[in-house]
Amino acid sequence: MKSEMNRTQLKYTIAFLSLALILSGIYYWAVRYIADLNIGSLTRTGIVTSPTAIHLLTLSQQYLTHNLEQTFIIMILAATAVSLLAAKRLSQPIFALQERIRDLQQGRWEQPPLRLGHNGEFQAVADDFNQLIDTLRQQREKERQILTDAYHQLRQSAEILRNLGRKEVYQIDQVIAQIEAEIEELRKPAVKLKAA
Image 1 (cartoon, rainbow, N blue to C red):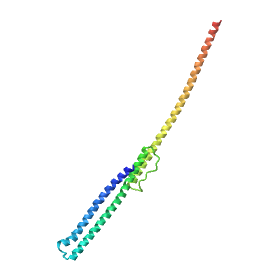
Image 2: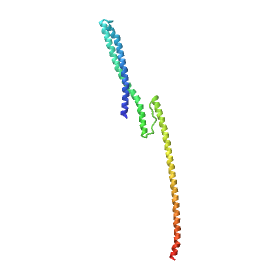
Image 3: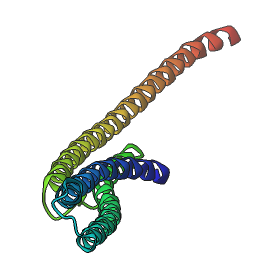
Image 4: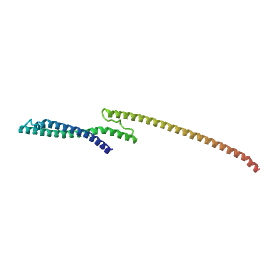
């Protein structure tokens, strides 16, 4: 789970960083081109002929290029930091939702409501998810109650059948005993006749 989250965060970071690099590169080359166009054209066209002025313009262009390179590096570092934060911010709610779904799959239904942020799209998804879970919990509770009621009714019915069966067995035993008693009674006169 952690490695999956790290891979996703890495994907987001690379995507954001690539975009930042492209934009920073465009900015760097655009500013460098404008500086070369303005300062370099003065020396190339011969408008400025003084060696001191040319030297000052060259120093100015080098200073501008150096500052531009520093700005470019700072922009890359800032873009990296923003990319990392944005990747974490985007991937955490997704993984929190995925983890909650896995909890539910493993039967852990009694969880606090899911919170994915103070507001916004992620929290709207979390609110819908929480409503879905509440509905499913209510349905599970109804089903559990129906099963419990059915179980109690089956137990009562089984007890009634057992009692009816006992009564019938008892009645059959009484009838058999009565028949046996009558057979004995019928045998007694026959025994008395044989004895006489």
